[in-house]
Length: 310
Image (cartoon, rainbow, N blue to C red; front, side):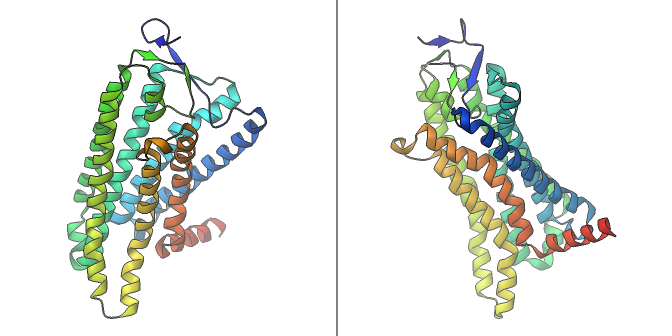
């Protein structure tokens, strides 16, 4: 029996990562550990940038934006797993479900755009280092960041508006651990052809446009690095971009596997795996990548450790 918004449907049931009762405690502990590490790692980046004047540069300004996005996206998705285990309540109202979907989608869009801005920052740092402080001024960084945040939230609005107008669902149960676009469309018995088309177009735009804008600067960066005569200079120039490039590749590969797979490979269980990697593993790895591969961050960590233990 199909359920309609007008007569019956006021809430959804989130089935979670696994329904096996024996796995609930291990899943809860694992998610809790991952979430605490995400909070700790990204909060450490934010604290270091605020306290250390050497890190108050355009690159670390955008890195702070990235840390805020990672904390927010993991909180808005993983909190339901933790709350459901502690309270035993795995229901979510329709309005709260739409809000969660809107916030998560917006944060993903924001992250792609922030990474694009960081790519431009790396281009200026490598290809035009003498004008770096002038070109990437605080005003420019603030404007770029503001544009990324506004566009990210605007891009996700059409999805939420269309899905919120669905009037019929096959079931109350969402076979996922949060309200995501694809599971909700699969659950709907309303005509979702427009939503499918919009997701494809927006997904293609979101994947292609920022992707092109992100990697075009690297064409010039690679060209500049090749023209550097000394091997030390080449390694130093590439080193300034390696962390950002690693994070970009990691995120794009995850999103392509999650949203742009062929229909024959797009199963609910595989979607859960890629969603979990996107919402947990990527925010977990980002601060590690930037701290382990960055001498300035490691130096700031040692400095803070020295003063706290003194």
